[in-house]
Image 1: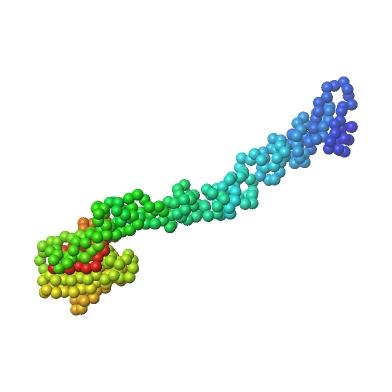
Image 2: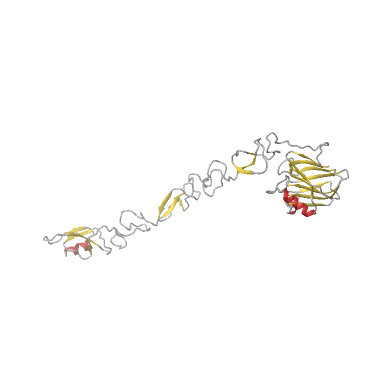
Amino acid sequence: MLFLTLLACSDIGLVTPAKDDCEAQVWYLDRDGDGFGGTFAVADCEQPEGAVAETGDCDDADAAIHPLASEQCNGIDDDCDGSIDQGIEDLQTWYVDADGDGFGGDAVQACEQPAGTVDDGSDCDDGDPGVNPAALEVCNEVDDDCDGTIDQDAVDASTWYRDADGDGHGVPEPSLQSCEQPSGYADSIDDCDDSDAALALDCDEGGGPGDPAEVAMSCSGTTYRFSNPTGEPELVVLSLYEADGGHGGPPGTVAVDIRRNADIVLVLSSYEPVEWQLATSGGANVQEVLLNGYHAQTVTGAGGIPTTTRSYDQTRSNFGASCGYSWPYAGGGCDTNQLISGVESFTGLTTTEFSGCYHGTAFTVR
């Protein structure tokens, strides 16, 4: 009766048996029936009712809490090891966002999201809010967007143009974007002959009164031409990328002097805007003018001559290609082959003359 009385009155203590003729064992009161007792112990030869041999229950009023219980994310020391919510296999992983840019660095595990953490750990510099996977890459020798590369595809990269002859002057194609100048590239597209370092800004093939060429050009770059003997009317194609005076600026002027004693259908083509200034002499008969390009093309001096304009800015169409100043060339937007094919299809004629260059100011057809 002493044992039962003490259990009712106290949670701590040790009761020794009244008998002294047996080998007593220590037993612990298990109030919640989970197989582990609390702090109240009794020494007796036989196991008292409501007592067990195992102790260590840190909450003997809750059968779910005992040393063999699984720790849960609940803010409680479920397994009585002295720690709360530790060693849990299903803990969530969070990442410290020290710079507040929405992307974290160092990982922490917790049942609930700690303050100052996010669920994305892909920040490669958590001390700089301007560096994260959502940032724009710029030319600054920093991996701004955390893709593992520096200054690649930077939004402020410069355009560089192939300089095959190493004279510091490039040509339009190929080109690439880079923060630093690559080897073999220049920042200009004004090389008139990229195979000869001695020729850069002046490759003029003439155009003066004594020039024997059937079509004389005043160009600051390499000139291109071909001719076919055909019947009349002749189909003459004169083509530039742009007039001298600046890339992408206001319309430049190009003088066209037709002196050939023939019936001619004249094609005037330029990617950039041009005001073509047409003059005829020596029995020349220009039957039709076709204007082609990407930007606006106009012609003066063609009063009474039928004129058809196919500029993308003006009509959302072209004669096969928006530009074609070199020959032979069948690549990219300046596709001379497509331009020639387009005007031949439109006119039903075979091209008699093609003459072109990148920059120019005048053509003379003799």
